[in-house]
Amino acid sequence: MTLSLSQRIDARIADLTRDRTVERIWAGDHSVWKPEPTEIVDRLGWLRVANDLRHELPELEAFARAVVADGFKHVLLLGMGGSSLGPEVLRETFGAAPGMLDLVVLDSTHPQQVRETEARLDLARTLVLVASKSGTTIETLSHLDYFWDRVESPEQFVAITDPGSSLAILGRERGFRRVFENRPDIGGRYSVLSHFGMVPAALIGAPVRQILDDAIAMAAQCAATIPTAANPGVTLGVALAEAALQGLDKCTLVLPESMKTLGWWIEQLVAESTGKEGRGILPVEGEPVGPVAGYGSDRVFVTYEES
Image (tube, rainbow, N blue to C red; front, side, top):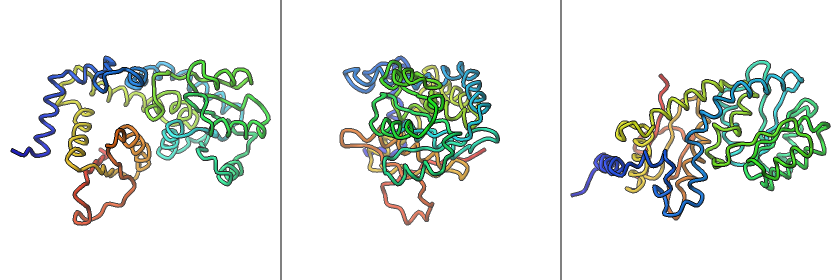
């Protein structure tokens, strides 16, 4: 008997319940994914990072106020991939609050784009935020070298990186205004709720408190104590995975205008996380919605409706 997609989803959820999969994920059990723990057990910090940053919120807000008080008008973020995309989405979604800094992201080494980015800024009133998990990202370090020669004071530089990285050491040696050392157990594309996302969010005046509170609330809804069938994270993940296994592997995002750029981040998160070992899910974002007859049989749609 051939099972329908909904039956396959129900069967998979039953399997996850039997295997205590959600409980094991929250416990950091690498065997959910692989027999070996390499690059798994040291990548699950994103599950709890919102609580960490919530405790640091007063410090982040004080840092942002001090930067504004010193007359800065822009923050230039030097970073690649996961270090820059999340902050860029926050800027596009929330804008820059009155009196706070505006965010400009440089994530390309193309000479013309570097020059155009520099031309947009009054460097004397720009805070340069250097973001690299490893501290060795060659593109980001090249950007740092370029702007180090053009910005007058080391007090205009801030680093976000892993503890003890070469960038952390360099930042302290050069007298950066601040070196934020992030939890090392978070991969780049999962880092938006860590210092990598929340420091620039605080600088532009985004609602950091609400972002973190909402993330904590959603984490509670996805906790190990929630029945698997009622867990929204599990339900969405299983639906996408089972659809992909049946050939519906083009995940088409339909988002409201107010949060359309969220698709940029979801695209990287889904494609880079699932696109391994010759299989994966291909996100489609920003595509105008058309008539049903215009789509192939490989589409699955995910939408969000504002309440």
